[in-house]
Length: 194
Image 1 (cartoon, rainbow, N blue to C red):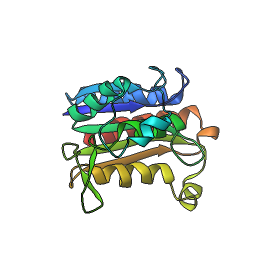
Image 2 (image 1 turned 120 degrees about the horizontal axis):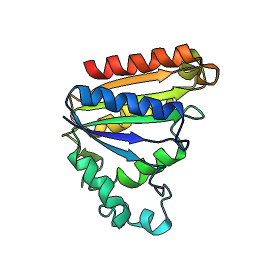
Image 3 (image 1 turned 120 degrees about the vertical axis):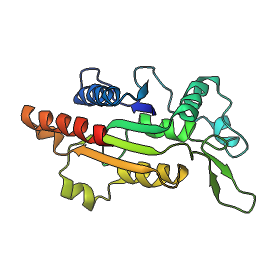
Image 4 (image 1 turned 30 degrees about the vertical axis):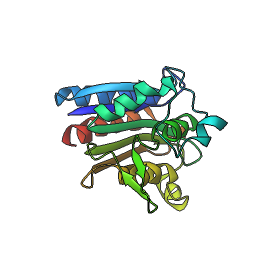
């Protein structure tokens, strides 16, 4: 299986980097081919400018900087998102990537009668691996907006039988070496089974 790993964290030595490395090891152990998109590492520009927005509903993005990202999406059969949950949602960098790359004539088409037609039927699996400072119960009170964006909104554009996985290390701000070790073991175990 071809897996696109979308990694989003500004600090190279972050715990999210350890999650990314563990995920890549688990995918390799399954014999799956992985490509990593490191949004901060490549200095991705998440800002949609005025002209880009004006033509958004007319055709696929024409910014050459986005073409490699579009090609990665077309190549993938599964996507693993790895990011920190900030303010209960996605980091701005990741949200900007979704805004700019998950675009008309790339991941959906606008139907003449209204609505959208999904174009990502080749994506069969989506996983989210995240860290969250809040406890689980408070994340549910807040509505888990980041989780919903990916596992509902993004998944709706993928294959109708697309499987999902969500793993979060809650209370990250007060985590311990032991809690982080357990989470990495869980990531490895669950990805290998996924």
